[in-house]
Image (cartoon, rainbow, N blue to C red; front, side):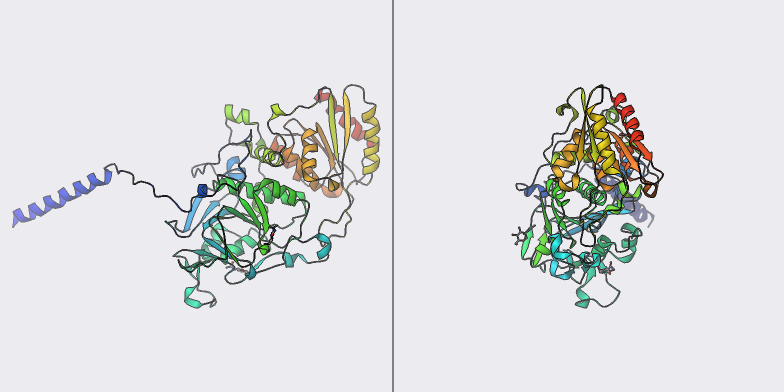
Length: 500
Ligand SMILES: *[C@@H]1O[C@H](CO)[C@@H](O)[C@H](O)[C@H]1NC(C)=O
Ligand SMILES: *[C@@H]1O[C@H](CO)[C@@H](O)[C@H](O)[C@H]1NC(C)=O
């Protein structure tokens, strides 16, 4: 009896040893099956990433300090949540969550969009055709089946009875939606609504009229005719591409119904192609779709209401002396904008004439920016033209080095020329206004002078200059009149400091 017990104890003991041993035995790796959803299989038609002097890799490092500048401006999307697991030859869906921004970059494979089930204007029309159209009509409303992902799993949609009842499973349930895609105080958070409405469809039931084989970004824009907001959307799209590790520049689809605007030039330059969701007829399926967070969730926008004290650093300093309280990301992005327009990047490639300085005066002009706009700007600098003329006279007779005063009539210039003028400027002067967002792609030694009327004391451009590490000066006015003599004194001291 005793020996039987002993024997079985020994046997159990031996068995445990054996299984522990087997557990630690080095496993031989299985040969990697060829992944049919691998992005690299579908490259040929996409633009490559340009080489950017300030580029740093975007690794996802979950142990990074969440308050570091990299978490705000770079890859802080370090918490990965798999909602539908990736598998051979089937759909998948996951999100990368950024705790400090309260935002997620989500992506999925075998995603179907039925644009007929998105209620919104067609988008991309000429402005004159849609004057007076309301903003609500341009923002998407998702009906059942607007977006689906092939896969199995998901959350039983226990709310109101939906569609074919038993077949409808949501990919992300309410709790996870709240946790990973919070509303962030945005009145109609369309990306949260899109992902909240995403349903699972069984393998074999995915019916597509058309496939997009290359990775595609899905973006909803809000204030699409304003350069500041557009730059937040562009930045979010760029960051999402890097977080998703896309080997080439993706295609981009606007999931909104805004009319076309001159700012689209930058979207087209930066990405491999740009289309409006409603331009697709029937159901289009994406082999790899990336859902871009709203521009309101970028550090560029969040910095307006909370302190993000990340001073811009040069890439050389960050290599030599890495500092997680500084950032190179906005410089990298500014170079991305320049490179997208085919303008050379890299300080050594750009030759500014010696002994001459371009002083760019960005002008604010009246023009109709969007369907709800009457075409008149609020005046922020009532004597802008007079100030410009005074500076012109001063510049032409300045003793020292040559000063070219450049008339930045940006509303009438192609985007590429605007970016080029920014790059060529030693000094940029402007009243507070969205045009100043361009300083994101200025050279690192450019000096900014912002003239701020009493009603417009807001930090947008002081912050961008700080995050870029640019020298920045503000002239705060009593009202909206700037004394030309004072501006000239300020400019003179800036130019004297620059030397010739
Ligand atoms: C689905 O979309 C509608 C309209 O866009 C929205 O009102 C609703 O909140 C969304 N549902 C979820 C769960 O997000
Ligand atoms: C919209 O669709 C039409 C017809 O399918 C196509 O010819 C056109 O290039 C598309 N436009 C855009 C901006 O994608």
